[in-house]
Image 1 (cartoon, protein in one colour):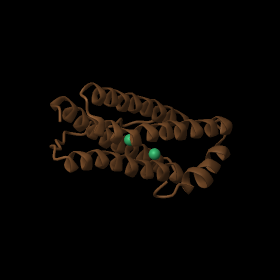
Image 2: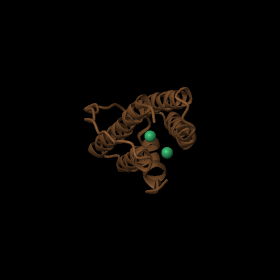
Image 3: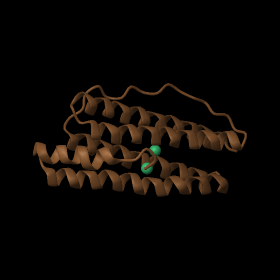
Image 4: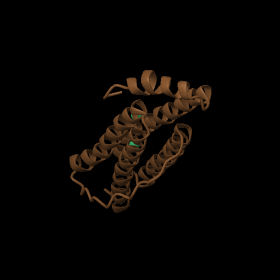
Length: 165
Ligand SMILES: [Fe+2]
Ligand SMILES: [Fe+2]
């Protein structure tokens, strides 16, 4: 397999693990601000991102190419309101989508159909990730800055996210 493509997949592993770290930092922010439902949603998302990194890891391992782990960047230390946080989530996921698309283009350029096929799952997944962030932003818009609206979303919507959802 092309060195360029192996390096790019390893870079993507790092980005997925950073996503996991970013969402864990957001979870800690919500835990510190009495929003355990939002924190739960972020913890589930953090686990899911770890799983994305592992999916790329297993792919490289399966085809006998090296997994090269790099340092995970520091996530921000401070976050804003739930609406600001979910705007950041949406922005982040749009950037991840661009990164997956660039990886797909590279696989095509390098003539690597098996990597293209592997990436189909991620292309679908990014549609879901962006949709989830937009849906929550819509609900946050409806709640406005009313604390009972935020509390309702925390208890009954985000807090209800299942571990594998
Ligand atoms: Fe991801
Ligand atoms: Fe997802």
